[in-house]
Length: 245
Ligand code: BT5
Image 1 (tube, helix red, strand yellow):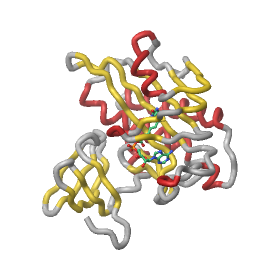
Image 2 (image 1 turned 120 degrees about the horizontal axis):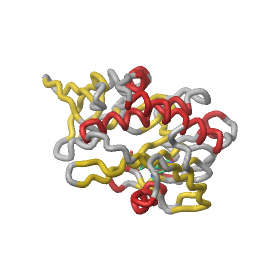
Image 3 (image 1 turned 30 degrees about the vertical axis):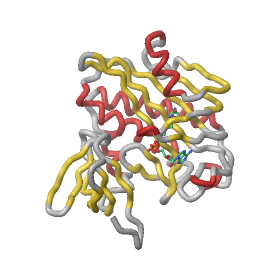
């Protein structure tokens, strides 16, 4: 198992931030787990709330080609899906969310350190809502936890172990040029075939999700046009009944 060098903290502001600050002195595949996370981060400067949940990040220092990085988001999503789905039916909302119905149960944040066009560090952070029973007001409509959705508390350490083993499995598949992780993200996508509101930070339009591609990108139909996007280029919001772009 690659992800065996573990650091466990009672409390940290953010496990991703910890790895960003300490990657130089830590071995490849180091794992950081914070039992409490006080300033969890989401994408694009957003915040991540953690209660009695799993907040964990892994460090990857392999010299992966930069154009392969979008695939590692699929690797991470497949590992999170595989970990949660024996306990609860969940789907993968490209690129980085795990959802139960229309509620988010886990989020993934991938960050990179790049120097002279070379990957120095890839940090993948997982936030899985495990035993939180009450979310802050702004999240109650859109978040759930394993305990809330199943009515049962779960053991965080067992989930962590399963997540690391699944990540090891799909990361190996990725390194060996396999496509098992791609098949998982494809078969369990919550978005394929759906109408979404697409936002490329310039315009917001309606689009239809045609496919999640093997390179990690999403294929959209926007009006008459079909275009492929990487996760950094756009954000997507699912359209529920009665909503307009
Ligand atoms: C994410 O961002 O979903 C990535 C979350 C990654 C968190 C992990 S925890 C370990 C590691 N260390 C860190 O500091 N981060 C990683 P994004 O797609 O931007 O979603 C963020 C949005 O999700 C927020 O703006 C809220 O609306 C919502 N949100 C915040 N906390 C949530 C929670 N616990 N459950 C569900 N939704 C949440």
